[in-house]
Amino acid sequence: MVGINQLQNEIMRQLNIYTNDVKQKMKVNQEELGKEAVKELKKKSPKQTGSYKKGWRLKKEKDRVIVHNATDYQLTHLLEKGHANRDGGRTPPQVHIAPVEEKTVDEYIERVERDIQSS
Image (cartoon, rainbow, N blue to C red; front, top):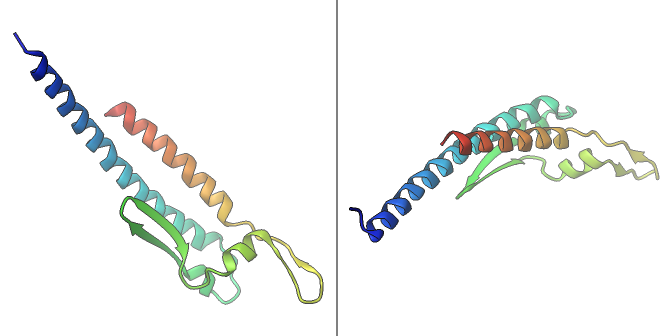
């Protein structure tokens, strides 16, 4: 007969194994989708000089993956949202970040849900 303490310890051990498995899969998904987002942003970014387009990078910090523009980070908001010109006019927005972000987030949620169910 199994004692209650042994049962409790075995349940905790199995939960830890499951949790670690899901965390590992989440890290892999973050990295893969981050790389895909960088490729997609490089394709969809406006090209004037090419510096902005080439500046998209993936940065890993602890448990996070950050996609950012390393060369022309100041332009991301201006291009995405539009901005005022010196002559009083406005430059129209060139939406290129939001669709990639939305697609990446949706795909990440789908993958995590699938990994949780399969583990």
